Image (tube, rainbow, N blue to C red):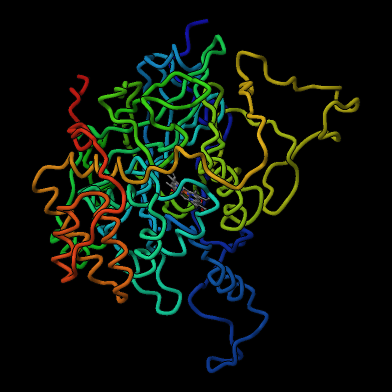
Length: 538
Ligand code: HEM
């Protein structure tokens, strides 16, 4: 047949997309009986009392009483959009993922978010932004669950509850709602100096994007790609916005937080509705898959480190266009469930200990958030590949499975009617060697350098970016009640750069401490804050 150039839509593969929640011309009960009056309850005479037998009243109020589901434990506030990803074919040599073959188009859903604020918090706060993409590929869904910053606070998922407890509002006062200006946050990041790299990105202009449309995105972790021949490389994913990277100034963010707390979601929807479709290019940095899993001396399993683009160019592999706003916020943006383990053949995980813990956490939390194990059947989560699993029953089961033998092999449902995937299309486990080593609760020594890349980031900044950064640290630390925490964070700043430390210390009215680790000898890196690529013409 003709070569396939487009991943089939859900409708074409028989998988329903968004179910129609409203049918027919008349108002009905949930069971389809037509209603005459939904404005008055049934009473014993106009002055009551209200009668218990009014089922419509009880159904209407009961359903309303159960309308809310828990907000996400992190990334509660978000905005989503549908779009299409078109592959350039440039990744074909390193991955066998079908959706990355030249010219392939794949439907996607993207959800942008802040991390710490509640569902109702303001958009323009200083925070990391989530950038989660669901690619509905015909080989199974691929979720690239990234952020707008290339590093993370911690190196081991076991610390995730701790950093989030420190970052969320204080347990006693529920203050602050969605900013990093508080004691527990600064207590954590000054006691866990591996967090200093992510923190400097937060304090930089990157911490307050102008728009979701002007954010970069990063897979953060190193992934393992596998090609047709079974050869592997290590890779990091990057999204580059067509509009370039732009931020709000602190003053703009403050004003917008009051005037239009929905600024980012409004900007996203308005742009799409106006036909100004946001675009990103997906790129990969590729590294040889060596037993050390390092590149240029950088440990690729350490999620607090980047690989500077001067050392490993970001190679463009495809383009994302967001071209459709959701019809229903709850059904799409709220119910979408991303998971790092949703990987098509050709893309695999590495042993990054942060990534490994994430593989557990998302499904676990979604079991509560979305009410049991059948949330993959919710329309926005349904794969566009055919699904034929042996998962059965459970709360909110919508599928009516046929057959009597949901196990393999069997001799009742025609033996093995559904063969396991052939080598061409199935996920094949990569035979990565696992170290023979004693069990240990520790990180590799290569995770111990907490400052050299932070200094690299500081040195890459222009004078105005440095000024913004100093003002951000001074403002946020100035909100701490505990002087000991400010002093401890100043000691970290001294290890990043004496000028940065001095300026912030002056702003706080405190003495500037001396560095406790030697300043790293690192070169400035202009590419860190630039998107210098020529955009491909249409
Ligand atoms: C949610 C990114 C680390 C647990 C999210 C979301 C993003 C994200 C983008 C929002 C997904 C959405 O829009 O629905 C990241 C990145 C990380 C990271 C880039 C580090 C590189 C972790 C770790 C854990 C974790 C270490 C736990 C051990 C969660 C949970 C949710 C979440 C529980 C809520 C999911 C839901 O309710 O559907 N994360 N995260 N994350 N993340 Fe992470």
